Image (tube, rainbow, N blue to C red; front, side, top):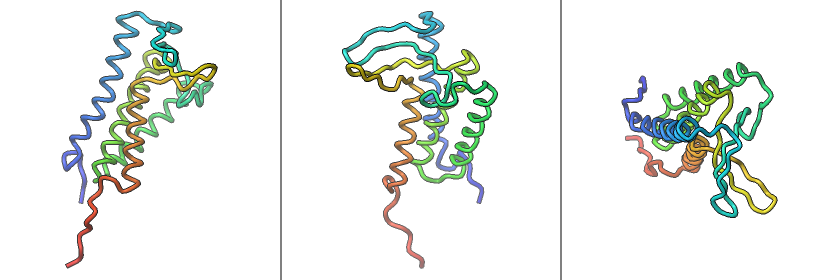
Length: 165
């Protein structure tokens, strides 16, 4: 039987659009309308700054020295694999999680095309410790992974398996 996004999963596409759209709107506002170019910082609390930092790598700066075409291949392959997994899945949490991951990944990939790097804004720190600087797309990806973990743990699945007749 062929599965399609219209059979129980089209709603999850809203999560993809939400992740992608919120991140794009935020970056458009901050970079295009406010004119931030990098290095700006607004101290919000003693442990949180609103900044613009350009990440040339993948997650945590991984592959930061790789040429753009290598990053493009890695991102395209990951997005295609996640899309195939989404297409084949029948589990709601899996589809929602993958949709958030794909939406965030596509928005960050578009940053690489538009700016040559990913724009990150949210910086948590404590005393001399600096934690990960991230954006809305990264938050969507993290939420997606958490949903996949919940599915792996069996949360959200029907506990009553159909008994053979």
